[in-house]
Structures are given as C-alpha cells and as structure tokens.
Image (cartoon, rainbow, N blue to C red; front, side, top):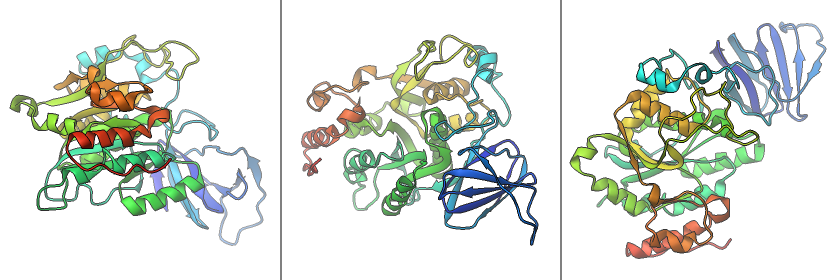
Length: 411
C-alpha cells in the first residue's frame, strides 16, 4: 500500500502481528501482540545490517510529509488519517484536526465572515478519508429513494442498530407496489473502533446487512463532524436519487409514518425549497469550564452560534446536503457537528429552518413508551436507558397504522 500525504499524520489501528511503516527515511515497526511501538532507523536496505530498536509509547503519531510506504506483513491493518497540530496523542484522545486554541474560528467572527462572504478557505476540510465499509443495494436502483435515513452510530452499538433495522428504519413498511423497492432506505455511519473484537463483529454485521458506512477516522465525540461530513459525502456521491434525508442518532425513536406523510404532503412551494426541519436553536457558546462542550474564546470568537438543528434528529433535502457538502470543502473544521452544519447552512444560504421543537422529546422520559403517541412526537431521544422502548412504541405505531405488530424479543 502506498499513500501520498502532505498535511496529515498517521495512526495505526490494526489487527496484525507486525506492521512496517517507512516514513521520511525511518522505519517503524508495530508489534501488536505487545501493545507498543518500536522505531528502527535509518531506512533498511535489502540485506541490510542488524537493527537496534528504541521503545516508544503506545499510540505515538508519525509525521507524514511526502511518500509513505506501508508493508503489512501479517493479517490486516488500518491507517487512520490525522491532521497536524499535536505531537503525541495516546489512544484515549481523538483523531482529527481539532487543535485546541488559536483555531480559525477563534481568530475570525463567523457572523462577519458569512455576512461578508469571506468564509472561504481553499482546501480547509477536504475529508480525505478512506472507506472501510460502504453500503450495497441502497441507492443503486432506478427509482427515486423518497427518504434516506442516515443513522449516526457508535461501533459498539450493535443492539441499537438491530432494533432500528427491525422497527422504524425497516424498508418493509414502504415498499413500492409490485416490487421489492422501498421509498425509504436506511444506512448507519460510524468511525473506527480501537477494539479488535468489535471490528470482527462489524465485519460480520456488514456482510449480513450491507448498510454500514465506515471511514478511517476514530469514532469519538470530538470527531462527530467527520461523521457528519462522511454522511454528506456518501449521499452526494452515491445517493443523489434520494429526495429527502433524515439524520438521527442511534438512540432516537421516530414516528417514521408521520414523517413520510408530512413530507409527501408539503405544499408545492415548499417542495421546491431547501429546508432543515428539527429542533432548531441559536444558542450561546458554552463557556462553562470542565464540561464536555466547553469552548474558549480562542476556539470560537463569537458568543452566539449560527442557527442549527439539534443533532439527535432532523430532516432536510438531498439538494441541501449536496450544497452543504460542497461548501464544507472550503469551510474550516469545527468539532461540534451540529454547529458546523449550522455554519454550512448559513454559508450556502437559502436553507429555511422549520421548527418542530414541540414535536421532539429531547431528553429521556421514563414514560415515553406511553406518551410518545399521546403527545404526537415525531422524534424522541431515548438515550441508553430507553432504547428498548423502541419495540413497544413501534408496535403502537403499527397498531395506529392498522399493520400487524412485530414480536418483541426478550431482553
């Protein structure tokens, strides 16, 4: 495998015994039966002399720059791209271009840059990741996919994905008359796991369902923008025959029947416009220290974000996704993906926000299985405690639609 890289660094996530990586005249050996990285140098020539090794800490990142020659001597491995900015990162840290203070958005006001049409940085966020898994049979049909469901999932959330496949994400309830094609299709987007057992299970899962999108960035909350742009990129390149896109997290319940009807009966004038429909907000930047979403003024200069849809679930047009993905290529990375989507929507212009905040249960409620239909929710954030409620809620939706219920598996 030979790969050219001038701006990125590499991190190895491998299921192999030995990896040899030649970089800038140095040879790096990964011995994965022992979790450490050994460095040898200078470059080994054929029939070269004995080499002594210097032990380095696990998870060390290797600087790129030019031609990288990689030799997988046993098994299989994965190389994960990482933009410059940090010298060392242990496995518990995220991969990605997040560099902390002194980022673009700390130096420039987003509000001003957008109003002045200056938010344009060539090559700012090219999303040059490799696919490890791509869906099959989702959009490669002649007929239009009315609604493409994109589920952002964590690699280890096998249970959540399986429940969604069997409930509100199933294409079986929207089959086109006289065919096996469906108006609704579902795919799951995830980053890389650092766990070999999870990787093996993912391989089996994708071989069975062919509905996973996986690129070579580490799955981490600071890499959620990578995941979002992976969704947009795949749609733009592979699913332009879709009309609408529903993005949701894998712990969200959706009244998919009502959502489809809502989209089918949009006034003609609205069908011709781009929109984002969801829990729309224009919040202040979170300045409280020691919290997950804390952001300094060095990271984001403005005190208020652009209007954006809260990421648990929203619906938009495929046309808007295409426009936002193209805009992302010249829009500097920001690690909070909901915020980044809001920046892209403001940059491209002409994307109307439709608030359905009252139709969304944003936090888990213990009685959500009883109140979901009663309150007419379109979406509910079940979170970890309530994912199993999807079965009960979906059966109640089926009863309302006069469709036979499905068997709920034992916990």
